[in-house]
Length: 198
Ligand SMILES: [Zn+2]
Image (cartoon, rainbow, N blue to C red; front, side, top):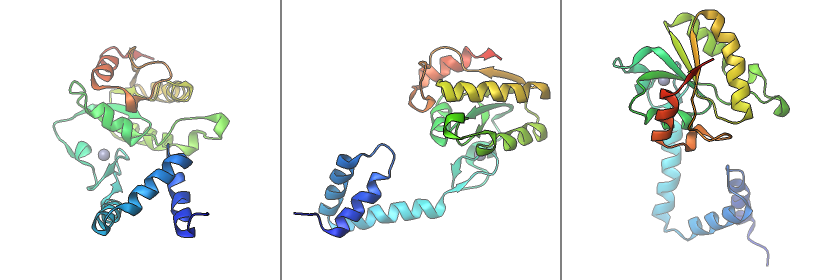
């Protein structure tokens, strides 16, 4: 017997979520459809509320309910040091490191010529603009330790160094090929402490 069309459509939507394959999509959908209706209402409401409240910080491009975001607005931060990451999840991971008290910038991805992602597809121009207008002494390139992250770091270092700003890359600790997002606090803390100048 075929599934009802409405369930089929729901599964199609869930399959588009990152990391959700056909089996997982099916399982999630059947789970949700078995929930009492007030639970389903709560689920839908939480998504809608978050969607309505969330905007993008105009300084660091993090997701936030206020602009600038609490990190950019925090006057106790060291405003001379900027950590450049690929995604909002990476920012969350680095922000758990207590030894790092600087600011952030989210690129929104990494350079990947094979996927057709070039310098104009991520926020490189906006980063350079910020570096020229803010008094930043050091940029820590905390892009992922995979080939895209490395390519991006090398490209950025070439653009930033001529501005007279110190550029460093995370040191050892993050596994080669590793995503900053999944590294633990101690590992990121060591990688920042052991950063090497590019
Ligand atoms: Zn911000």
